[in-house]
Image 1 (cartoon, rainbow, N blue to C red):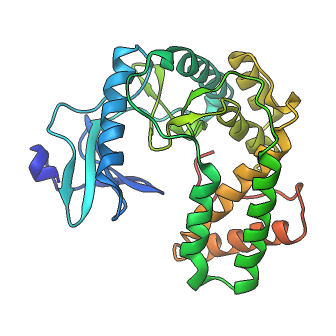
Image 2: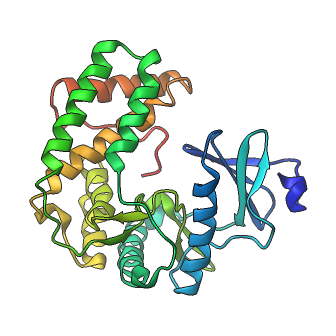
Image 3: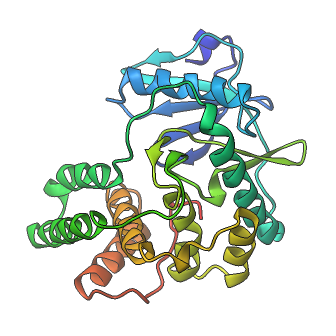
Length: 286
């Protein structure tokens, strides 16, 4: 892929490895490699979204000026500008920045001209469960499937209070980077049409499950202008988020003993219907 893009292919630095693998190529570029089986249509949609976000003056990462997408060994890849990670000692400010970014994102995407799919977060989680069947005890897969069905039934009557529209889908501080000191959003895989509240849930769960300081959430909610925890659909969406986080991590059970231990902890909280036990981020960017 680097050869196709005219970039140096030696000494690549693995920066992130989750749903995709992201490599630092040099001081100016990163290469994002999608999982095998990723739809070419989805890759082109993400490329089109990057152009639209730039046109609408939404603070987002920029694509590099090379022919995109790239393809090698049945994988697609894209090349982006390389941005700075936030400083951990500015954590509260990053949460405030995320709130402002999401407010801008929701406001300015009203003029988006890229066709989008409707939000189907539970379907994505269910697909992962099917893929995990061979690696987990049947009773655990059955238990999570039952929880998924319960969440689906509880989601049906929930009424959003924010106007529906374009959502980012993965609104978390790990998807905030900095260009010349200014925060921008990255990662457009799950951009869709859905409830804006979904983009606000992650930050609250980061406090409830991962032990982030309450001030992180307050800064985020105040910057956005709405406290999603006051919404009567919050608990259902929190469970949905936790289901997605559980099934996402279950794909990575081969990574380390620590990951397997965290998966077992999360499974236990589902078995016990336990909303209080702390989870560890392990691979997630919180």
